[in-house]
Length: 343
Image (cartoon, helix red, strand yellow):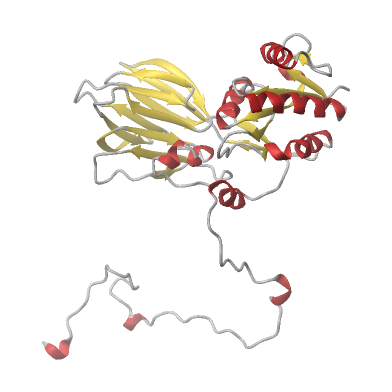
């Protein structure tokens, strides 16, 4: 049975075209059949005066349903574009980073041969990433419906005017404020736009929805993490005539006039990402952001856990009569009683 691997590359970059030609040759040499969109194959043929090995054309020689895996060569933007292509097909994506940070990518350009070897030997796993459904309402009617893997970002349409919004969780209003925008993100998107807006980093296996305001003019406009079963909503208030615009994954946009309402829920259709390595997310954070970890000693080795030694006593609780009025010591918030000796 022919094992087909779809190659998707950013054809506007020379390094991406070189990587696509190299990957196709390595896939073919490993007994796999490389598949490309017609336009991509034509560009490679023109750039390199033809390819040295046969490739199948998507839509002519093979359909998406015939593909085992999609190998994406580029940055996170290219992977998001590929996610659109396989939205309703049970085919995983495996990204090779040719961009900058590349959080969605599994491997780097220097590991291309190793990545192809992992595909050929089927030594990869597949994880599901949560996506969100996004619905836009205006004057009681649904005017748009789309989805996102990273985030749904509501931004001001005009540079000189901020938008007024009110946020809502599970049908209850939370707070209103003026801002440059607000990001409604998935855990996957927590390291993208939401991170730039000051939101928290959420591990991919944690199912949650995030809210991160952008340059909000309010005292209470902090990032929030809520249940994946919640429904989030943002309404563009009519206090001014400022318009907004909705961007989903930076690729699909919808105009938001005053009075428009954007609702976000967890989608039933995930995006499937293939993984060659078992590197934990914490290690990926350190590598991608070049975080300093000097001085780290690590956990106690397993062989030392059973070493005989003196019994370590449990830290005792504070006696009831010695505790504060609320039963604990809260630095900076406790109420100090006056010293009776000086009263």
